[in-house]
Length: 60
Image 1 (cartoon, rainbow, N blue to C red):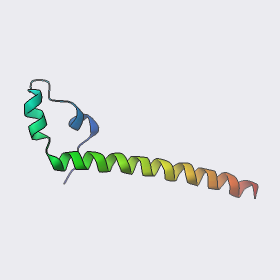
Image 2 (image 1 turned 120 degrees about the vertical axis):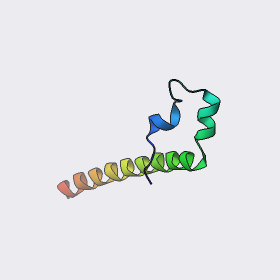
Image 3 (image 1 turned 120 degrees about the horizontal axis):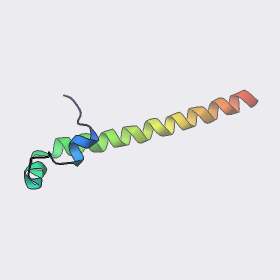
């Protein structure tokens, strides 16, 4: 199963009606969006943390 990108979830199609889009954007898509967002935040935090660890290791 392929994850939806943020732009696919957030914006309705150009020719589509917003209500139609919201109906198509089911719970699975919303959950994928939330999980992807959380993963991005986790990776960002891990990268910052590992960068700090490398700096500490360099001076230790």
